[in-house]
Amino acid sequence: MRLLLVEDNERLIESATLGLERVGFTVDSFTTLGEGEAAIESVRYDTIILDLGLPDGDGLVLLSKMRLNGDSTPVLILTARDGVDDRVKGLNIGADDYLLKPFAMEELVARIRALLRRPGGALGSSLTAGNVTFDTTAREVSIDEKAINISRREMGVLEQLMRRKGRVVPKDVLEDKLYGFDEEVTSNSVEVHISRLRKRLLNAEASITIHTLRGVGYLLSEESGPEG
Image 1 (cartoon, rainbow, N blue to C red):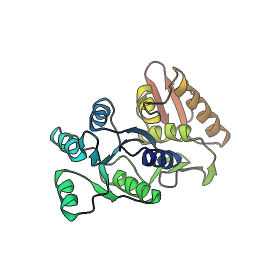
Image 2 (cartoon, helix red, strand yellow; image 1 turned 120 degrees about the vertical axis):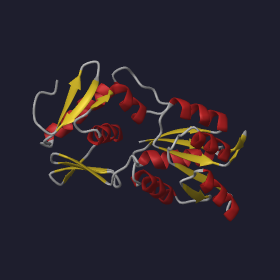
Image 3 (cartoon, rainbow, N blue to C red; image 1 turned 135 degrees about the vertical axis):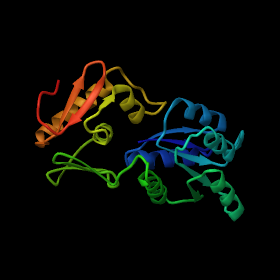
């Protein structure tokens, strides 16, 4: 899951990014409305965390533009403004939730997950394919009810494949979900994660297979067969 954080407090950016990445999210962070708007135009995010008091304007301006353009991406407003009028205005424009500063990291994570679990959201509480279960809330993968150790990147790959079970997932989609703007992506980064994930699944006797469709992408199926 890839999130956008638009916030001008560098210390908050650092702590929020660290906390969100620790539970499996990929985070892009920017400090101005202009940068945030440019990011939204180039990447499809799963959720946007938006501050209101930004150096070049009010975050509600960006939110209003998004909704007028038909962008329904969930938006969580992160702000120090605690007035009822401010919250009502934001919700009427199209905000999905509000979180007042200062906040606990656990609450931010819980609120984001709640937004992603809403109907039409990107997050289901549990994914299943064959004998593999992915608890998206606890960020745990188990095979035949036995937890397995898996890296954050490999978990991200598995999540995208399980969400699209039986359908081809293009390589660039995986890259978009796994890496932020500031992270280096080599030409074989995804292939490396796929290879390691296959070995983990094989060693744990998973009843799913990841197929490679050369030049197209990857497909997860429950039947056994050649990996391609």
